[in-house]
Length: 398
Image (cartoon, rainbow, N blue to C red):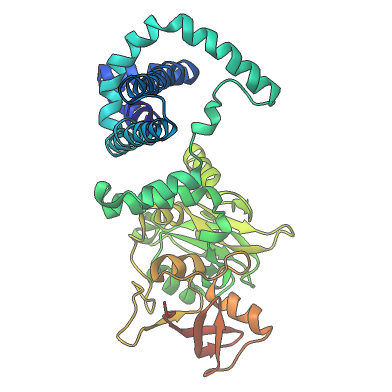
């Protein structure tokens, strides 16, 4: 029972209890730190008792009933049955079922036993290490093998059941996923960036400033691809109040754009934003072409979920309707669709639903056309210019 309990005990739980001052947990961890000696003293006792019981049963049987073959066979079967039930299966079932509780208790018994039997255990382990050396196996425990990877931690959180509140579980899972997320996955695509043209008529510029849903806007000249910087609307409030805002003063408040390579990990970018007190940057590919805009809020929302005000015309939340379908904008990120709708759309190519459909067709499909990608049925509802504006996604059958 002690052998199974010590091997099956949750070492992370024991370590947590030991940090809180539990002496039994600390004793169990000390024993587990030297696994060779721990197993040595446990198996020494196990095998000694099993061998002794078998020998005693044989001696008693012969003295009572003689040395007939059927008598010895029956005694062998009887002692085997007794050992299986009493000293093997039943104790080990108990040890496995209550491993964490028993590991704290049996440590107090195993520790003095190990001190008493240390010479014997040391002698036996000499032969064990020699045998392991002949088999080219390490004699010491590899501490790296006991460490959990990010994927294993994620699985542990997902299978924690009611131990972790759903909101906390969602936060932890999102944090694990950040390790494999780049700024290209969370950015606002170039076609969806709200920007101001400095070469546009002043009335159009002021109207865009007055109706903006963001505090930071991209600024370009002539063509949307020719982005010259970022402007902070809060810095313009004083000028507007004093009626000093014009095209010249507006241009003076344009900040130099900060460019981010498309493959930059989100975690690294978040650290850069924090260290350099920046809030936004333009994502560019290897040729320097602007792909989109990423802000501090985009990264934070990837961890805790949406908290900012949704833009007009966008769906604030995604949920399956009564007909097991949902209308989705073409510019919706695939990661968001997978997370909120429980889909498995591929993420190794395009980042938006529009990009995924266009790549699949190699052309702009017309409204009413249906297709199936990764087992998900999609119907084109509305197209505009060179992109899919709205599509209907049907819930996959399970």
